[in-house]
Image (cartoon, rainbow, N blue to C red; front, side):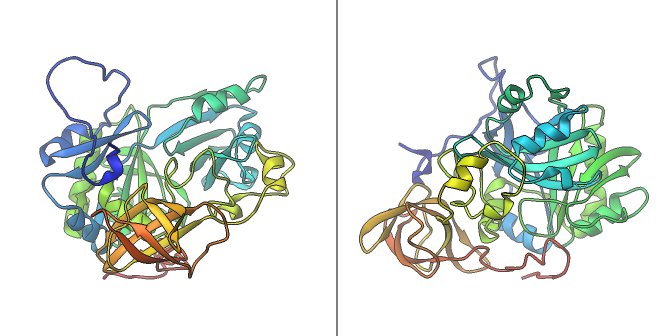
Length: 391
């Protein structure tokens, strides 16, 4: 029985005793979340809260859309440092990262030699020869180590944890929490170092929701309990609250943000996933370039709008009664008032506007349509602070 069948789900349970959990890592805010009744998935061998007993997924979604919500993520920052750090990363990623300036972030998408995708994430350039790569779930560390042979670069795990503060009040919370006020400049994809209650913290103007937001990076030397107490106190007048991945998942589907490992994988190229604009074909070389240049450029990943049901992950997408794709993400959007999802079609033949039937959470097949993503805010004005849209 698959965990995606809508009836069963395998999540992490806390219980007494010693066991085979030595390969898993709790984030620094685990004890703070514990009274809320968290249920965790395992992501990069780290615990990440999916939902909480003290509030519903829909409550969490509206908190994100109307006030501010915090997710302590399972993203895994790797550190690349040394004279050849830039050269290695430019070889590993499809985009030209030499253009990423110190104090800025970039989107990092890595492929195998055949063009299939490994993972994606946010690349932070902290110095000319020092980077953090906050990767999504995926097998990237060993891949990077293998391709660094003979290069003057050190790849390490700095034991850093990423937390997201997202929602229309996010920047108000940042201004209130920062000992010296809002960092300037702090535009989209910027990096800043701010002091929260006397502790210097790296923050980025990024997120996984397409809401206004920022992320903070908890390092081993931080007093995490004091850090969170400071941010929470600053955010209380603005409605800050910890929430889970289920609530964020709805918003990221609305925004057309893909999830590594489900919406794309080793058998999907960036072009097929609709991420071809992150491939710099003019770069001198990068892993997978030859295959991507020679391969098809058609898109196979599209949104699903379903008025009468909630698309179910791994369920079929049919065209004229014949299976033509698979649901890779599904939810019910409280804002749009109907089921939404992401489909990976078997070919690029079927695109937005195609009438389909999709497998839904209740076991039925329902009429739906392939649509463009994102479902709204097509120009991504909300995360850039150019549109205030509080439903």
